[in-house]
Amino acid sequence: MPLGWWTRQRHYFLYTVREFTAVPLALWLLWLLVEIKRAGDGPARYSPHGSTAFVVFSVIVLLFSLYHSYTFLTLAGAIIHVKVFDRPVPSTLIDLSQFASWAVASAVVAFVLVWFGR
Image 1 (cartoon, rainbow, N blue to C red):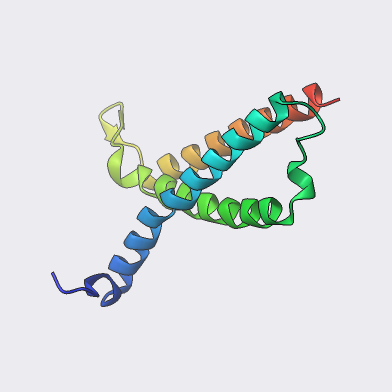
Image 2: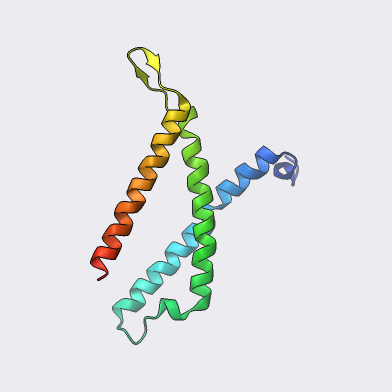
């Protein structure tokens, strides 16, 4: 394969970008583990919101994770094939159910974080 094969077609480029989104997510998770370790060392050492770099990197990684989640969930209709009364469920309905599940899970996590954060 030539070096820039992935830049020749839009589909290949978006696929490569989607696969690349795992790298910043992994780096952010490692940084989060370091912050958790620092929190265990005492409040004097822990200040993630005091670091502008952590906040900026977190926002960038949030964008990457939203793109990754969106592209993953839109594939659900092409991958999942369900029949109800011997009739196939439309792929659009499967996609919408995946996004609805994502929204419900996000709301539950947000509620738990706010509730226990008081």
